[in-house]
Amino acid sequence: MVVVAYGYKIGVQKKGEDIESGLLWAAYVIIIAQVVVGFTQSVGIDVFGLLYGSEKASPLYKLLRITGTMGNPNLFGWIILQVFIIIVLLNKKEYPYIPVVLCFALIVSSGSRTMVLIFPFALIFTQTLRQSVRVRVGQLLMLSVLVLAGVVGLLWTFAEYIPYIAQVEKIFLEGSLSAISSLEMRFIKWANVAERFSQGNWATWLFGLSDRPFTQVLDNSYLFVLFRTGVVGLSVHLSLIVYILGYCYNRRHNDVAKICIAYVSFALVTGLVSESLAGWFFPIWLMYYLGIVIGTENTNHEWGHMAKRIFRTAS
Image 1: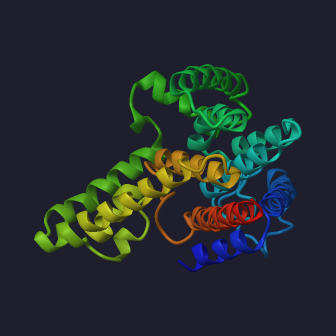
Image 2: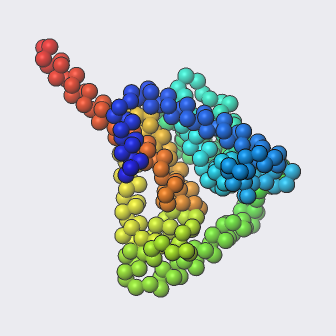
Image 3: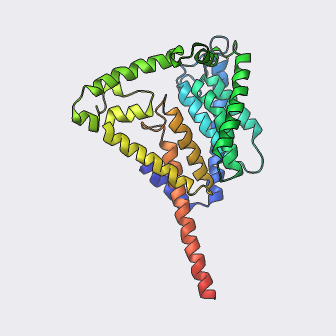
């Protein structure tokens, strides 16, 4: 609520053009910083190790994975995806080809297989929002699948240089998500916590297991909320997310609202393997955007009423 209130203050006090310019500027600063830090990690030079944890990073000559300033490759990939969305939707003069290529290169270098598979859909989705307020679902899915096929083919061509990403091939060859070790570990963890949850009484089902060592990290937004806060908590959580999505969709003439739509849409998907809509850190940007949208919409509404009063007085 503090973050929403701060975003609201920005939305009320600043002009829409200034807000968008500030967000775009921040996105470019983030991407430049991640390129610099990521490059040092990719070549094995631990220049920024004292500032940013790089335990999960590895250089190109081993098994390329960079974490940038995030300390975690999957979180790094998610942040870069958000930066990509901001740059594409707010850069209105021309399509930002170079930043888009940089974002894609960073996501591939992160080794986040989820983000690599989502990126083609994000590419088409953001372009659709950029061109029109209408989203044609059928056309979006068809183009996304074609782009995804091209990206997968490109990645398989260079599999020897990015072996971590190339593991996605195992899913298609073996016909099982468990073919990837990280997913198999998630399945085991979810099953163990689900067993404890199912053995609880009615209070556990309604209000969850609360914050315990085995519920602190579940790599799934829905199970994270369900096991910690129960059916009641999950219902409230999903209702809030659906409300935010509907609220922003009805105000999609606002470019920041478009960013919210993209954020929620991809967070609902990535929430299957990460806590993209739960926890303390992931939803902060969404809450900030929401506050801005509410603030700018209220300001525009007030200006609209004022203009009508002035017109009537003049008449």
